Length: 520
Image (tube, rainbow, N blue to C red; front, side, top):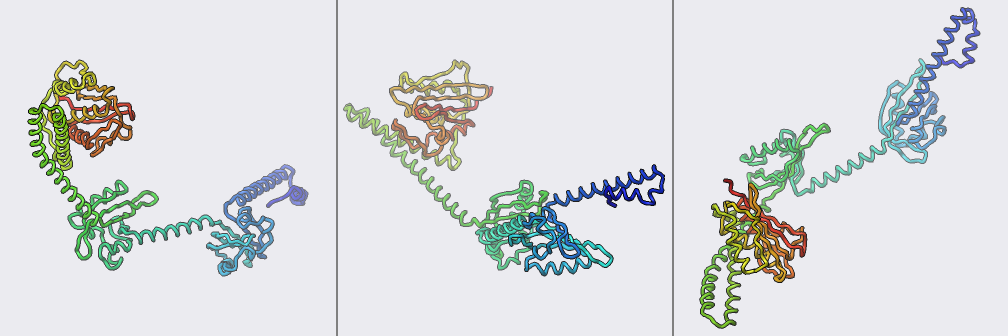
């Protein structure tokens, strides 16, 4: 009951109410007004809710005209609410959708609701995809009814579905064109989906021969435990890449494959199965083995050549030294001295090649013994100090006690000689300033060699310990570039480390050698 103020006044003047006591009349009037206010409040809430919905709502009256249009319906169809009120639904139904609506109309007469996807016509003649629900509202005993149309604009969803479909097509094409075998497995490692390359790689004839087959049937029995362990690890980590297995084809032949596996999960991160990519690496392994074989032959050749060179070098050195002792002609002595220096270079080169061969085969050895580092350094450095007077300084920092290390004296002389020669060659003779400093802690000794020479760009500091690396400077330094590479390997065999520091060109270089101190 929804009464206006005039209606309430007429009701008060009526015979029934006027016959009641005044106090009782007032109570009844108050109740009627409260009910009326409540109904108005519910009506306002309902209208607000309908108008604020994201769904379009159209109410078709008994005569087939729209009697209600909410703002969202008008917005989707690009009309105003007034333009749609009183119109029939034909103006918003495309011709290709008429059959759907006719079938739906039959359901309405039976009082059945229905939902379906369709296109609706907008005012400008375009089609908008919607998800439509129709509800029949029976209004009289004779089954005359009104119909409520509730629809949602699914334009963005349709675009997303089309994009997803295109994406799926692209991925399907990529999978089919992939040179690798691609498989989807369930959690029991049974094959669920595969591409054509999988059929070809394992020498089967059809995909159906592999569907439902365990992936372990494609791996040799000796690798089964390893594969099972990696499957469990894949679930823990999410993915394992480039694991090598020996695979078996339908005809029993074997080949090497590199397998990458990842877990497929649902929206709650529960594992559903595995995505597996298998790549035949037989040819790659063969090529790699051939390269390694060639590299090994090259190393063996270089090592044998280095050994073979030592005998003639030794003989030539002996005769050259003999001639230098006998000769008095300064011009001839100069030439013999040049020969001797180049023989020393050949000797060093031969030794470097031999050491590199041993390093690459893991056969470089050191003969460790207890040695007192201060005495060793002093005896080694003093000839350099005498030769380069005032240009090389030995800084002992007043370490008085004996410092014992485990070292190979011969190998450490090679390292120190290499480091000092680099410092000398990297400095100009007129301004050369080189310091050798010893620093001792509780656990190690540091030998620090600093020069004021050419310096090294910071980006190249680590590279100087690689093979065949040298950086030409204006000082015309020559060499094979292997000295620091061999030195770093020798120091590693002493359980020590070596590193370089420089701020750049023409700022000098500091090389630091760390060796473990022998504990008392």
